[in-house]
Length: 220
Image (cartoon, rainbow, N blue to C red; front, side, top):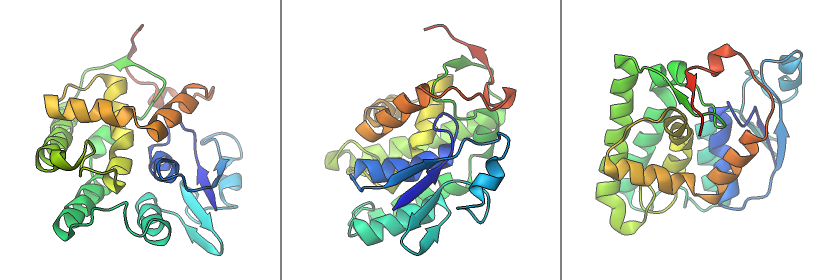
């Protein structure tokens, strides 16, 4: 099995399936293709029909969407445990995943994932509204499922993978959250797979463009 990813510092889509595979100790070979450098599309064309990442190469199967990869891995290799066992919770978990997959466009465009940075910038009303929505989602899940564990739906799930890049963004830009969501954020960042991704992202040297390095740099 091979997982084609982009830069760990910037590629939020790549992070999701990588964290899933690492968390559940599923063996895979990582193919890292630095994005937006000379010749990167030619290199991606070897693996990706969309010239985007991530792509999972599993035998004769090629899966090129982060949520589709997550669902496939859960079904094929994890007997479905990357989703809650309870049907109602499973449906809610999928709703969380799909909302993340399709939404939060202001955050995506104005708060690019930049794992190694700590930045300060003024949030637009659109970004603030979306951050509040994420806060609401996290807080509601933790209230409902906290007795089952410390992840969104108790046990680690696809939802935690999908929201891991959001946690990175919130850490980078110092987004203020409710107590319940902040506790979840800190817990998720300590997940060994998430922490490994961040550590490796911090070792990368590529700088894609000024558009990915927004805000005033904070000295920690």
